[in-house]
Image 1 (tube, each protein chain N blue to C red):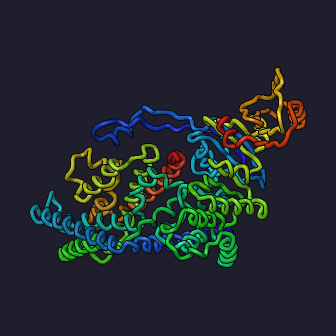
Image 2: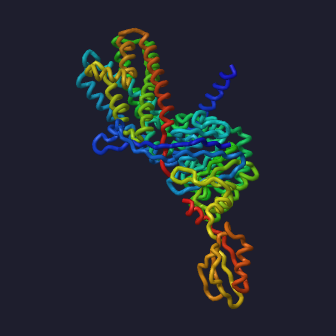
Image 3: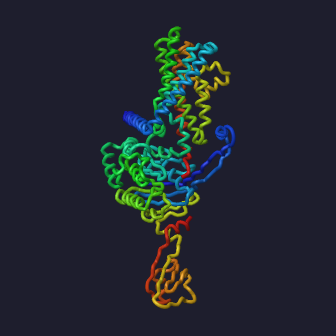
Length: 274
Length: 322
């Protein structure tokens, strides 16, 4: 009981700290207002061009291997929104290389707070472009699926749920990749492979790919559990509701494993010479 | 308070491959270059000591400090600081430490100085009333209010160091690790920082470990010196005993009144280095001869008008140890 109280007060103070660090980060960047605004606008432009790409693919091919245009849009937008959620709250995990190369982790390691808690809020931003783009495609897909009678209100709740579990899975993949940096220092290329390439592949139905590749996207880099696997149940009614529980379990396992790996990686931190 | 037991640190860096996908290939590389940065260091520092930790660049100073503060994990060996092992219970151990890296600020670069203290207070769970009391105290000692609302990036080096020291003390730690806290400062700023550090140690009883290349820091502040070279401790004792261990000769300039005569056979402990008119400069090892003996010997050469003694320069002593 006492331990519970202690834990909850600790969590509360961590949340307050996280909140304060987010505010700090935003204020720091507002010092360079022009840069901040320009960055936001450019990010939104990139999202629009990506959206046009997808629109062309969807329009041109329509249905692929039994997956309708709306279903494809659903897969794509869930992936986008999960990624957006992950990058909004933990963007720095993706940029850990900078901390390893410049030795910035030194200072953070001398603070009595979890390292991730201190790092994650550093570059907090609302990714408006991504939210709008993902939200728009998701809305359009859901609308189409609703009209064809494939989904109901429950499906929408489930969708929100898998966006969160998906963010957890993507975060875990990102964290595990970043952790490898404790051995190699440079992780840019690896991230292109495990984060960007895998996620892009996961935007489409896994049945498109050869067997070895789809298994890899489910087992080695489990992006398939972000959207494809839960979508089988939510919009296509395959398998059963247990799929959602399985997805949650997978997300928890990924998170637990990546956190353990991260903690081990920190013991291998080499800092920089001075 | 601080205990290091047989610390070893070996850095293994994979050999970087050339060409395409070098990063990915490095990942699977099995070739490493090994560098032994610290090789079997042990020491114990008691509460209230002020220890200077010196050595040439690349000797392993920073690596040791980073192991003591929990940043680096030793390859083998163990650290206990304030009762905790920072490699097993990092968060508990660092709560009681203040760490300042002279080369790198711990403050939030783009924000006013005062904002950094708010964040740090939150990180260390410092109560609002304690925070205000300590900031007032530190601001008075370090003259912080002068640049209280200036963004950190606009501070002068001296101001930044003062702000950084205050940041490291906000949570009232018992142990302070200072890595080159006077680097790059002008004479005046150095003096202020030293006075403050002395006060921390003497009046507030803080245990301090400091690295520096400035021998005045050592002479004026530290009651104990540890010298590291090639990853090993080569000396551990008082600043005075370091001076004695090396046994550098004391330089004496003697002015004679009128004519004088050097003996044919000089005392082996005395060496004449310069001679012009009435002034003779000699070097004598005071480990072997007392000052009185040397003066008595000089007295037999002629009538002494004046003499000046110069203790060996600390800087030179250190050169000799390295």
